[in-house]
Image 1: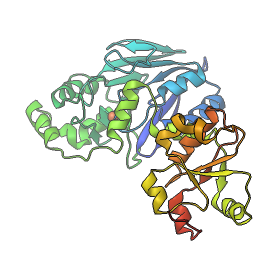
Image 2: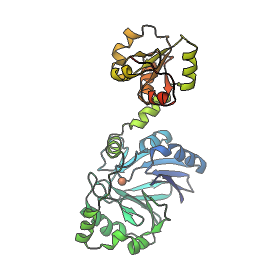
Image 3: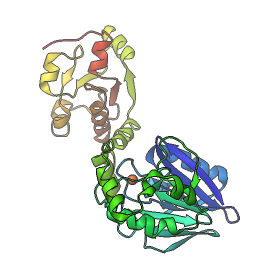
Image 4: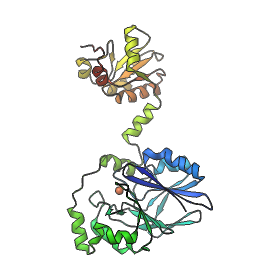
Length: 343
Ligand SMILES: [Fe+2]
């Protein structure tokens, strides 16, 4: 069996494959590592058939759909998962054929209602049901410590003790263990009575993950994170550096318009020399009246450089094919000591 672990901060994902048939699967892909999975698949010569999420993640952005689309794979999740972008819903006990590998789904609710472990040939991919030296938390939406108790002690820990554990998180980069080692040493698994286990889980006071609501929204709906939206806009917009703009302003170049897309009070408090104003919120509705000539070169800027990227992308979409954005924003411009105009 081919097995490669991919780290993204504390998150762990896996590329697995069958050596004889060159068929593979990706487990819990994360959006910042898309190129890594693609690179691994091509380096290992694997045709990725399945893109699997062990559960609806609350702490990172799933790339299951993107991987499936890029590599022609099927998105696999539990039948209780709610995102609309699932090609194959699995039930407890269903087996996927990854070439000659048999990858079996084990429904293990507790961390989330749709949590599922996948096991094959002495390996189990536990998602956040069981971590090395820990378990997933049960205080996030659809989590339930009673269910986690049943999933662990009634199911997962009954697999062969020699089975190697590959979790969805490994915050300290500790080496992989076996189920037997976890049963012996994992502090959470020492509470073997249901009431004790549930009380321990309820008493844990863990910080909410960053991006909690956004990650849930994106992973449940299959739509976009704000960072993706910005990255997409940035990929269709050219940028002008602050130094270049400063040179052009000093040379009194009059072949382009500098456009402030912030709110009016921000513009009035100080703007780029000669800048015109049209707030991002009014852009689509007022652009025809403000810029009757679609061939004009428009340089958008805002406070931090993000809204201006969206504005420039919108202008390009509307046919202003020379729209660009400042690489930076008013804040960086001010801090760099460039000239600011008032009123
Ligand atoms: Fe999770």
